Image (cartoon, rainbow, N blue to C red; front, side, top):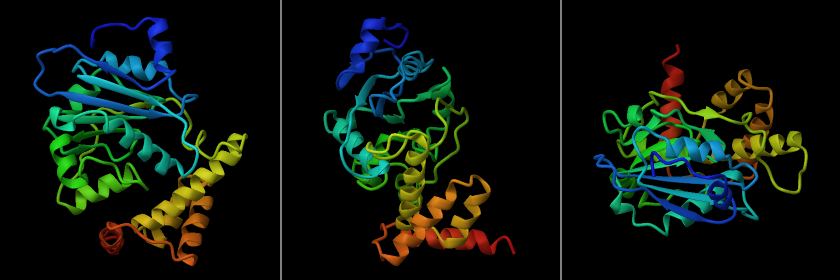
Amino acid sequence: MANRIATRAERKSRFQEHRTITAKDSGHEKRILCVIPSLPKDLNSLSIMSIINQTYPVEMLIVLPKEVARGTTSQKVSRVLNDGLSHVKLQDFDYLLRVDGDIVLPSNFLEENLRGEPDLCGGAGYAMLIKVKSFLKVMKGKFHSLSDDSYTCYKFMKEGFEPVKRKIEPVRMRQKGLHHGTSYFAKPRHQSILYFYHRGKGMHRLGYEPFHMFGRLRHSIWNIFAVLGYFAAIVRREDRLDVADFVWRRQVRRLLGLF
């Protein structure tokens, strides 16, 4: 399956429903499970092809083009991911590759990023490579219901598993934040506002300190909505996650190191 080019009809069928594609035994040492959570409109056939054509083949590919009615982007993604993982036996695999449906991976992405056998490779959720043994120990085999990627990274750090940077970077097919938001807003501009607003609330739950939030403004003016969401969560005294104190202390130490 890793060296096979899917037909147009086969690619189209993957857009219609939850599909599980099992690779043939390739003789490679590590068994890789890949899960792609995506809105049907965002799922790109190039993403699927880039996974199929990896030089280090994927054992099983689960494509999840699914609409979720309620919740933030992170909540929807976590729900879809956990639903997909509930249909497989994680213990049968060595690594979990979690990739967004609009991400294209260079052909040597797995081959290079598997070197050193990291517990977690990649800090951003759009392309994360996770050792299953560590995932089962730290996360009990499930993504957090409120945050699929950032929480996973900080939870690994808190438990003593330091994530490593990707040696090979994926290619993003969309502008950051452009397609996120709730379905009743049609314009990408409004979707982006909601995306950043909910992102700010999520950063409060994770334990980010205020200086970090204001520092994000230098990256994009859109982050003003993240700042608003962050302080709205503080005013409402919204609950924080179990990694929040760890994240707060970590960021304060980094700030103190600047002086």
